Image: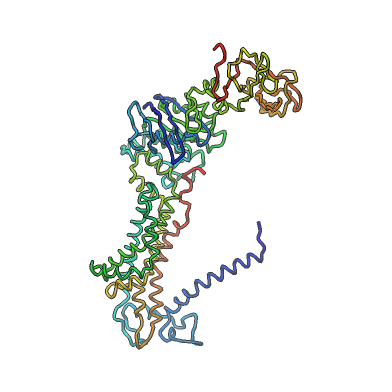
Length: 350
Length: 286
């Protein structure tokens, strides 16, 4: 078990800056998630932790000890690769055994450990099969079993369940969270799926172009995004980012459809973020209903006001007709303010 | 999409023609190998596809039994040349595959060796004749002349570029994550190569080795220059199957040719399963 720390780690590939001055500390036993769009540096950070890449500058520490020059085998970190990387010439059982055999564990212990892990992941009945004869979900479990079977300082997973269908993905991520809690081990998890990141992580780091933009608990990152970039990445449907215009004593959004008192808006605000669930519909004629998507428990209403288009997430299945005129209601306390450079601005009086 | 019938007919006709052109000489050689002297010496209207009285005389002849119809007796039998060919082509293939695979792996993974690929390619741009005379001098000096291992060594060197380039392509295509997984799971670089990469590369290795073996097996020029007597190979020995009294001994040559075709064919059948790619299926998510 270990904490994992990066101090201003930079990694370049040729002219591409893959990781830019990354600093973070994953605590012992934490479920830590790296989240960002493709090519934001998530996978490179994992490879740096694994020792498959060496940083160009900066320090990597396990439990306070620098490991920059330590090779992958000696770092004792277990990994589930994005494409699983099962050994096709070995059966599922020998795949799971592989790390133990390479570490010269005695056969009796190997048998016991493999049995336990196989049971935990419900793969006992497929252990004799080769990867080519397994379904996507089964391969996934075998790959996870191979990582769980030994006693590493930390587990790393690179988007391990992205190939599964939506339902299986939800099941597996809940199970993963459970298993991690039971094991009490450090787990570093990489995903491009905001819902997955939010649902499993104790804390998460949000990346953009190799830079860490924010490290926070998922709920905090959602409620207090550091910038409009973070705000956009978290939450579905996406947050509405609207241009703010000062008109007399008020700040107007979306061609006057929404108006906030100037006193409630921090100085320097150029854009305002309103989460779809904080945008209400009331009788009135502030905006036009563009489209209605009933999702059962919720309804997404897309609204048009002036040049701006925004979405409201309403509970249940309210009766809203396309092309009708509606009024908008916004709780100023639930609104996010952003400066011209995208950084969040604190609400006045807080 | 269904193609027009005329197209299908044309396609199969073309295939049939290609197969026939390929197989006719082999069929003719096979037929001739089993013909008695009078038949393989026949000309014009007396030529037949099937031996009228099939016999193993040609085979007996090259292995030392004198033939009733031929007044000549062979100085040497085919046994030693067959052994020579097997040893030199076999060990030559081992040398080329061993060195070529190691070099290809190193170059594919660590970008070591810089100009090696081009240097190896240059080795093939030389006409072998240009270097064979110096090699003859060197081999004589090293006392490798007219030995099977001297021949195996030069075969290994000459076919090394083929082995290298074939294996490099395969290594370049090899899924990297699988090796990285093995590294993370506790293997040293060498263990990764031994326990993961090589077993998964069985198919490309086998097909490359067969290709290199056939190159070595059918060499004439190098063997002619380097093995003047003792360790002459099948092609060199075959060229000697003639006499001033009988002219070319086509029956004996056909018999020897048939024997020479056996090892590559057996090797091909043995690794047929591996010649089909797709072994890596199931390792990675699609």
